[in-house]
Length: 192
Image 1 (cartoon, rainbow, N blue to C red):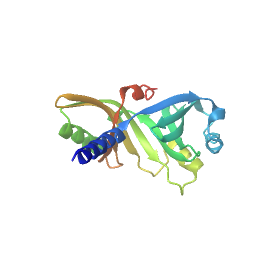
Image 2: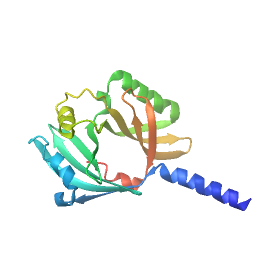
Image 3: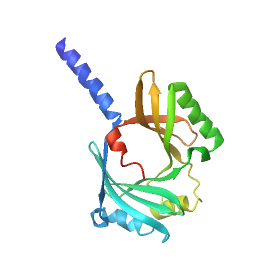
Image 4: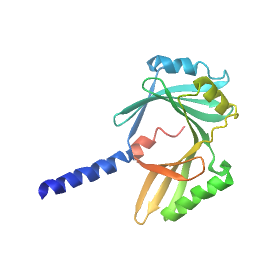
């Protein structure tokens, strides 16, 4: 009986832990970035400014990210540890999201939380391996992509008596996909 209870408790703890974003981000030099990723970064438009390089660890996963500004937009290009693009995120204002999608997102928050406050919104373009990485990036930055982005929303939410900061993902239609609770110490890096 004790063994079953202990196993159930371990399972519950693992489930809760797996949903918490304990991301650690540290600034690194360009030379510490994967060489394959550097080749892709070299293809960024010349007017990309303020390139900053980071290494992220989230539990067992390690990735690399370059943050930059392009035409007054803050962007983040994330790579696997092997230098393969994962996604390109573009900081946006929640109010600029398409009305239909924005309405679905707002409905989700109203239906699931007693209070909510939006902290940050991003368009997330997920890289498909069959695409040429240079064209993928160029089309997004030049607003010529046909790919519809997902939306990442960081929000402070309240349920009954509990408050959390969470990172929510909504698909291209504005429908809820998942969320992760953000450890407040890991959120410090998210702000530009």
